[in-house]
Image 1: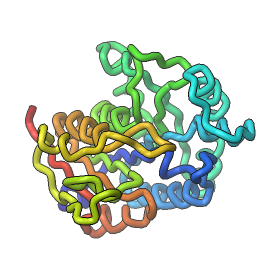
Image 2: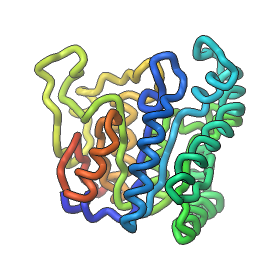
Image 3: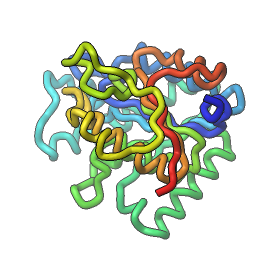
Amino acid sequence: MEKVKNAKRIVVKVGSSTLTYENGKLNLQRIEKMCRVLSDLKNTGREVILVSSGAVSAGIGKLNLERRPSSVEEKQALAAVGQGVLMMIYERFFGDYGHTVAQILLTRDIVNNEVPRTNAENTFATLMKMGCIPIVNENDTVAFDEIKFGDNDTLSAYVSVLAKADLLINMSDTDGFYDSDPRTNPNAKMLKRIPRVDESLYACADGAGSARGTGGMTSKLHAAEIACGNGVPMMIVSGEDFSILYDMLNDGVQHGSYFEPFEK
């Protein structure tokens, strides 16, 4: 785990299932602990980028809705309400630990076109030099099918490439990648080290996310293909306890599944 322990620039992705309660509203206690741990890791000299879901959930809480909407229009409206709320929360928590955050909202056309892609790369590089913690989300209020990443697993992989990261840590409601669904198969085995993503792994993935998220194991494999195929190792670990980041990054202890970089 030397590549993990020696990683200087890390991208941490957290999804809605990690950041929210079962009712869909934000879990402020968990968010505060995440901000504290990431701030502490930054204090060691590392550079930290956070890819965060939660805008729609923040909008649900702000408007006191009883359920998560199903229509695209409602989700986009809630994202518009909630993105500012979410950033205010991050401003507060990271600010309490002495760090400045910056908001970056992306759509897939930025990745697919040379000029905006270069601009995004330069923005990440400049924010790192300034000592900021970029907080990235998809620009849900304007995204449509042709320019959507679709889920923040995919977004985080592209961010790790744009930012030239040393490591992508995907914090999930599952503590790693298994050879079958551990929720239904008690004999499922976690794959600790994965040298390459291939069809046999996709056959193991269930493809369905949680009720509060959009990505499942299939989307995480797709993210691993993007990141690892561009030289960035990726880990899938549990989002239940952010203190495991200390184990991995300070002590080199393995948690979850490690996807090795590979040549395309």
